[in-house]
Amino acid sequence: MRLVLMALIMIVSLGYFVCDGKKTRLRGVQWWALAKMGQASNDVLRPTEPVFVNPSLQQLTRRQRRLVTKNPGTVLAVAKGAKMAIEECQYQFHDRKWNCPTSDNTHGGSIFGKILQKGCRETAFIYAITSAAVAHSVARGCAEGSILTCACGVTSKQPSGRDWEWGGCSDNAKFGNKFARKFVDVVEKGRDFRYMMNLHNNEAGRMHVRANMAQDCKCHGMSGSCTIKTCWMRLPTFRKIGTYLKDRFDGASRVIPGNAGRATTQSGNEGSNRTPNQKRFKFIPVNPLHKPPTRKDLVYFENSPDFCVEDNTIGFKGTKGRECNATSIGVDGCDLMCCGRGYKTETYIHKERCSCTFHWCCHVKCDTCTRTRMRHTCL
Image (cartoon, rainbow, N blue to C red):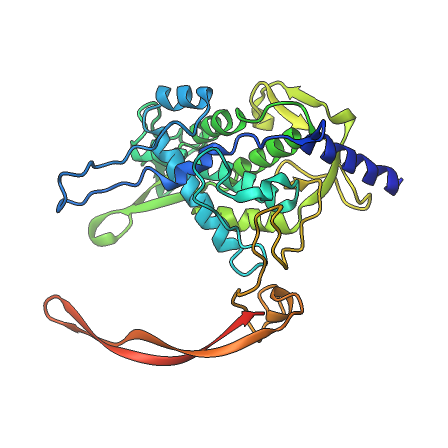
C-alpha cells in the first residue's frame, strides 16, 4: 500500500513539472514583486519627490489589475502585505537551514526563487504567509480609511458588557479575506495537485487571520478612571500570525489527493464561514497513522531538500558561511546548521552606544563602547 501511495505522489509531481520533456512554467508568482515597490515618502525636505511611488501594475494579471483598480488603495495595501510576508518569513526561519531567501527578480520570476518548483512544506508556508499578509493588510487598510471601497468592520452582534460598549473602528477582516481570495487565488489555474495544494494553503493562511481577531478596548472617564470602555474587534499583530503558521509548518501533512483529486464546491452558509463557489479539497495523509489535515493545516506532497549544500535546481546557496550557535543543540546549533561539516570561530570588535544620559531639554548623550564578541560560521 505504501509503495502505491509513493508511486502516486511521483506521478502527480512529474505530471506537473514535466510535460513532453519540458518543465512547466511557475504560475502566479509575479505579484509578490510588489514588495519591492510602493514605498511611501513623507520627506518634506525633498518636496520635488512624489509622496508615493505607486507600485507598477505590470506584475499583475488582467483580473488582478481590474480588482485593484475597482478598489482604489488596495494596491498599496497589497504591496505592504507582500513586504510584511517576506519580512515575517525571514524572521521565522532566520535560524533554520532554509532561511527564506529572496531575490530582486521583478521581471516575471518568483521573488522567492526556484524553491517554488518543489511541492515541499517551505512552498506551503510561502503561499500561506503571503495570502495571510494580503488579507491582514487590506483589513487594516479598511479600518485606517486608506481603501475607498470599504470601511470599518461590522461589530459583533453580541451585547455590550456592564462596563463597556461596542464602538471604535473594527478591522474589516471580512473584506480583507474576500479581497485576498479574489486577488491571490485567481492566479491558480488548472486542476492538478499543485493547484489543489496552493489553494488549500492560501486559504489556511487567511483562516489564521480572521480566526484570531480579539477584542480591544479604550478607557474613558475623568482622570483615567475608566468608568466605561469602548471596545472593537482588532486583528492580531502579523508576528502572531507568522508564529501560528510556523507552528503549522512544523506539523504540516504530506498528502496525496483523495476522490481522484476533485474539488467540491460548497454552498455558502453562516455556520461554516464558507462563501459560495469556495473549493474544498480532500487530502489523504501519506502516513496512515496521521489524521487528515484540517482547513488550518498546511499540506505538501514532496519532501524538502536538505539545504546543506548549494543546490542550483532551487537556487539555494547552502549553509556554508552561515552563522550558527555553538552552544545550541537545536536547529540553530552549529551541528545541525553546518550539517556535520564543522565550523570556524572568530572574534570581532563590536561598537555600541552605552552610558546614555538625558540632558534637559531634550537631548540624550551616549558614549561609544567597544565589546569583543565571538562569531561561529559554518565551513
